[in-house]
Amino acid sequence: MKKPKVAFFDFACCEGCQLQIANMGELLLDVLHLIEVVEFREVMSEKWDKDFDIAIVEGSITTEHAVERIKKLRERCKVLIAYGACATIGGINGMKNNFDLDKIRQTVYGKDYKYFATIKTQPLDAIVKVDYYINGCPVYIPEVVKVLKAALAGLPYAVPDYSVCVECKLAENVCMYEKGVTCMGPITRAGCNSWCINNGNLCYGCRGMVSNPNQNGAKDVMEKYHISVDAIKNKMDMYNTCRELKDEQKKR
Amino acid sequence: MQYALLKKDHLNDFISKLAQEQKVVAPVSRGFGQFSFEEVADASRIILKHIPTILPPKKYFMPQEETLLEYNLSEGQSMEAVVECQKMVLFGVHTCDLAGIQCLNIAFSERPKDFNYLIRKNKIAIVGLECNDYCDEYASCSLMDNHFPNGGYDLFFTDLGDFFIVHVNTQLGDELIEKTKVFERADKSHMDTLAKMREKKRGIFKNEVDIDHQELEPLFKKSQNSKVWDELNKRCVACANCTNVCPSCYCFDVTDELQLDLKHGKRYRRWDSCQNEGFAKVSGGESFREKRGERQKHRYYRKFLYPMAKFARFFCTGCGRCSRTCMAKINLKETIRSLITEKA
Image 1 (cartoon, each protein chain N blue to C red):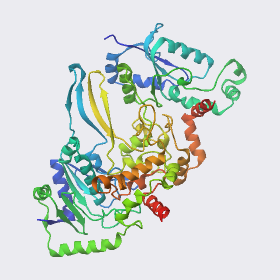
Image 2: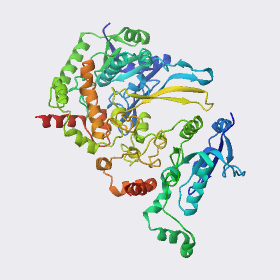
Image 3: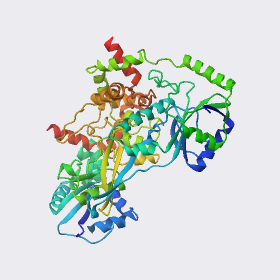
Image 4: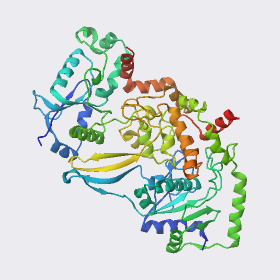
């Protein structure tokens, strides 16, 4: 079997999710038995200008230029994988959408801001068809491998549509709320095997919300543990502001 | 010997002698008032007085994730069944959790029998531990009639101050006694102390909800269209904590997964929950229980009505874990009280 050609690309992001691939260790050797990496800016200097099988794309879309670029990339690949929080849900870049775009540009670029065009932050699937989603900030390597295997075998991969609490309970962690810490686990999509909580950190909601969160019920949770609405909103906004953009699009 | 005596000073010998031969698991502290069953080498970390552990001992009978078979695609449909199991002693199981294990035994013995469960169960020796007093305000073991020992163990310990009275219930229990050689004969004065404690306990444990045990089934029968479920619909966040910590929930999902060579693979099962969004979803995207309230109702009915019809036994053990862990403060005793008030 000819190895499928795989290329990595990035848009607005920190490239940390791609770094996770470089950090895979020995597992990377097994992965490289299966695929041929033809372009990956972070680890190799070769470029590839022909078509390829799988595009693994990190980052969110924040300029008109990026819109055109992702559309062209989509035409060149058979399978497109949205890779990391920025690509799948907009991620941290989405915080920009809480502000007036001109004011944001002035803050970042000063008096010459008009030369730097910008648009609201969007995840990849707002522009192009996405075949597989690998959520997380950064991505969770066991899930990356799972999705890669699914993509190579031509099988679907469904991101779990239940909360991080499920995986956290299976890991039998002491609940963060019992420790007096506000955790985004109850409304955040699982799939990371409660990676952060297993290691003593709390959930920041980097994988995006479950498809059908109970906003009214979340109020009860806050009341039970004496948490203010603002505190929760700040935490939700860190990764999930683009969700509002999606809600708006649905209404239109 | 039906009853034996173990001096408290000898508990450490009992545990460490067993631990030299096989895995011993017992409740240990996890901080923040939480406990879990963990492997121990001696009795030093064991906490005798504990509220129900985060996960029930179910996790040893039906692990959170377990391989069912392994396959090799390069040889056609070649596959081999797998049972991952290990001999162990489970120490310190409260009567509520003993009842939970009994529920699982019944469910998994039904045809088609679940051999993974039944083979593993035969490798586990169970040592129960009596609660002389309530663990906390969430328990409803008295309502469910699980506050006194009712079988389902090999040995059963009752803490009576300086010593334990130990009920020897099976041959395996007898073997543990013989093997460790730390037990003594219990005489009449010890048995009197046990009887006195049990008498006192009858005064402490009172039906926690104002309803007769036998009235629970009819109550749920006539509550199919209750407004209480609408109320729970508003509150539940579908985190599924209630079912994942339940000692009698046994639903699982089965997945096939290939290794990176795309030839070898395994089929494994993992705990699933009726509270999860996708649980009752079918092709086409329809869900049989779309609303969280419907899912909550389903959970209650799987404890108080359906198993009565099928097994003549409640599948709620009264351990209180679902109420303790609920993110939205949904409390089992309050739910039953609301149903009673509504139907009154």
